[in-house]
Image (cartoon, rainbow, N blue to C red; front, side, top):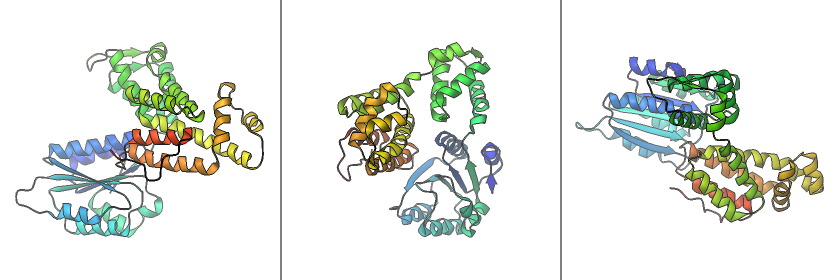
Length: 349
C-alpha cells in the first residue's frame, strides 16, 4: 500500500508489515522516517539489525542468504537495503520477490533509496511489493511550506518564534532541512529551552545565534580552492568539519559554483577573453580574482568530472555509499585547487 509520511506512525501502530520502502531525495525526512520504523520494530522485539548497501556490484545472494537463515532460536531482525539508485536490477527484483513468496515473520525488510519514477510504480513486480508492504514517498518541503514546517519544529522543541524570526531562519537555511535542524538545536541550547518552558524567539536572537558563518566560510573555502590555495582550502575544510558544519552545506555551495563556471568556460572555449566573460557574468568585484584563476586553470571536462564526483559525495552523505564524505570533499577540493587526485584514489571509511 502507498502511504504518506504523515500516515507512517499510524500505519506502524496498526500493522506489523514485513516490508517498508522509503523513496525520496530529502535526507532529513528519509532519516526520520527510517528512525521511526526502526524504533517501532525494536519495541516489538526486532533486536538485531543488518545493513546492506546496494550498488551495481552488490551480490543479491547475500540478501537471500541473510533472509534464508532459519533457526528456532533466531532473533527478530531488521534487514536494511540502502539503494544507491532508483532502479533495481533484475537480480534485485527476483531476490525480493523470492523473499516475499516465503515471508519470515522474524524479519523486517526496510528499503530506502532515491525517488522512484512514475513508470516504476506501475510495474507488476512493484505492485507485488506494495501488496505485501508499505511504500512511502517522501517529497521535499516546498518553499512556500518551509515557514510552517520550521514553526512546527520550533514548537516541538519548546520555542515560540515570531513571524520575522521564522522568515529570517528560512532565509538563512536556504531550504536545507538538515541545516535547519542544526540551527534549531543551537537555538534550543543557547536559549536554554526545556520541554516544560516555552521560549520566545525574535529576529534579533536569530541574528545573534544562527550561523551566517557556515555559509560565509563555505564560500571562502571555495574561493581559496579557485585561487589554487591548496593548503588554505584544506585547513578551512578541517575547520568547518570541526565546527560541526553538515557536509551537504559545503557540497551544495561547491556544486552551485561549478554550475556557474560551466557557461563561462564554454565562452572561453569559443574564444572570449576572461575579463569580458567575468564582466558579462557580473561576478562580484571581490571574487573576480578567484574566478579568473579558475577559468585559466579549468575546462568544461574537468568541471563535469568534479560534478560527477560531487554526485558520489551526495550519495555518501545520504548513507547510500560507504565512502567517507569528508575524505571525498578533501579530494574534490584538491582537484578544484589544481591538484588532480590519481585515478582510483577515492577511499572509504
